[in-house]
Length: 96
Image 1 (cartoon, rainbow, N blue to C red):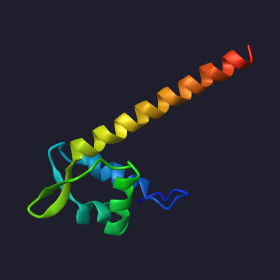
Image 2 (tube, helix red, strand yellow):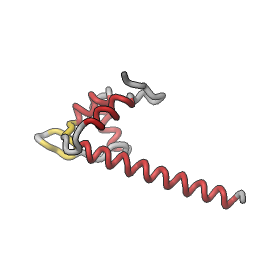
Image 3 (cartoon, rainbow, N blue to C red):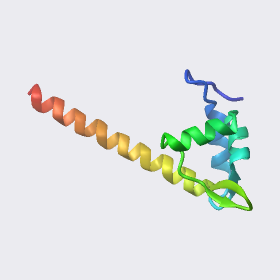
């Protein structure tokens, strides 16, 4: 069963599906859209916003590997954590 977040994204479906696939698994835009229960145009928009890594063309279709998507997400999470830590230090310095 999937859980819908406030922004409408389904969490369990993506995490379970990507987590169960080998890193080298190739995922097309069409398949990723289906996994996320979104339209393919929404996938393109997510790439433009930096939420997904840029795809490469394979057999004429935009594609990713599971590893590329997971690395991109992990890098974004690490960057967000660093920004939170930086902001926390800055605020602490202002209010000792």
